[in-house]
Image (tube, rainbow, N blue to C red; front, side, top):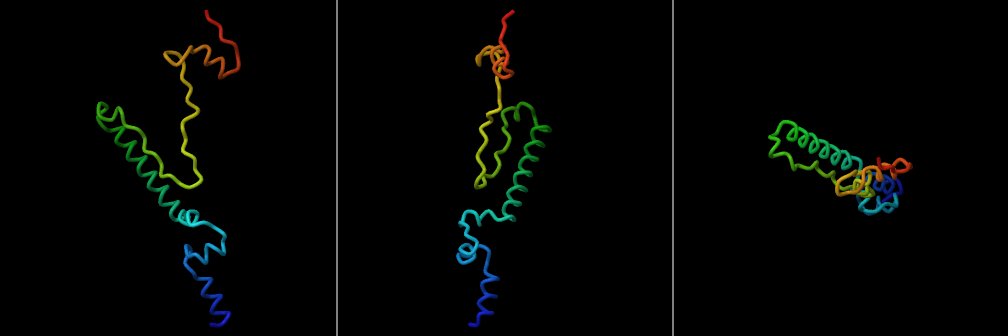
Length: 111
């Protein structure tokens, strides 16, 4: 095999081959989530969200009351969100005035 043939052979190796990964310095998991797979996962997520919205808006409220939005497909490097921005006021979660004061940095006053 000549050097030109070897160069051509290496140039056209499949994206996920071990030799191509070694040249790029990537892991099999990183190569698994190639741009086309990322796009497919995004399309699937959007179809699932659209289906959820359609059922929730046009379905029977008694049956769809407890429906939860679909979870997106897990991707490497993306941490699952635990909804840390939810702030609950009053009721069994605490005093509304005290919680608001914590959020906005003021003092809670009781009338």
